Amino acid sequence: MSYLTQLLNPLHKRGDFDCGNELLNGYLPHQANQDIQRHLSVCFVIADNNNVVKGYYTLSNSGIIRENIPEALKNKFPKTYKNLPVTLLGRLARDKKFKDERLGETLLLDALKRSFDTSATIGSIAVIVDPIDDKARRFYLKYGFILLPDSKKMFLSMKTIGKLFNL
Image (cartoon, rainbow, N blue to C red; front, side, top):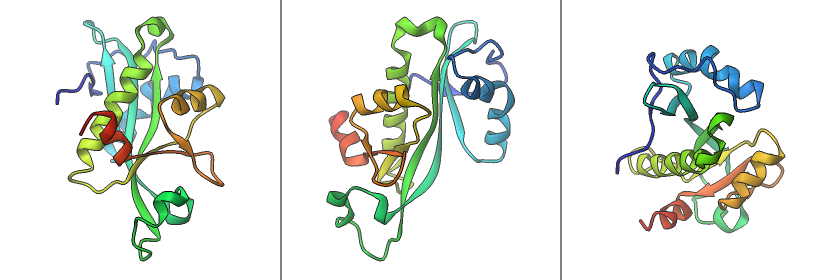
């Protein structure tokens, strides 16, 4: 599958990015390169023809304590696995100037497909997110993410993602 995003690179113009959240705005110009160099996360962007970043997301490997996953899934994994591998969708933001382009949805679907494809070579049972606010939580709920017990994190299984893409 071809993806709609590309890896963040030095040609991307990110200084004027404004999604309305200072933490997410500051990530692109001040922290993204450091995270990439340290192999903490990978940043994917959608940019216009002038390399202006319209939106971005980050992915990294993570783990989740077995006890924190939904009860229906817990028994599908060996009890010897106390920590289960997941993909963390760490940040997802689109510039306010492009709000009518449904970029949030496009970025999310791209991230889910990329995560699903990668799970065939690097084990991952789900994509997890840690929504920054209630608006973000509602966004993820709309796409099938479920709240994890005793956590602010949300969870979407690779099995569900596969069904989303008819895989």
